[in-house]
Image (tube, rainbow, N blue to C red; front, side, top):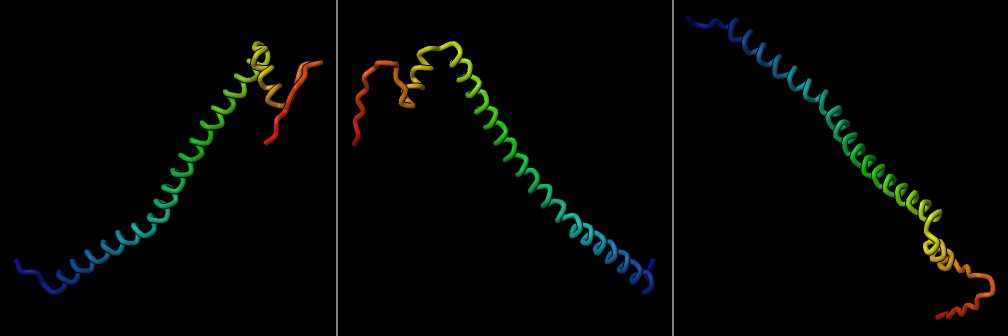
Length: 95
């Protein structure tokens, strides 16, 4: 069966229309794809920062617990901050 000129034109127009629709769809979806990728990266960064803050909070809670129960820890922190017992003689050396 031989195709007529009209059939060839109709087939060409149909294929061209499908290609244009596909390309238009791809162009319209691309910014959404990039935004989604950017949001995933932001999510990963925020999750990392949240985990870091959780570790800091746990460390602070541990220090609070030690302040209540560990006399040596309290003395160590106090001495690091220049505190001394009453009547204690301290020598400070400067470079």
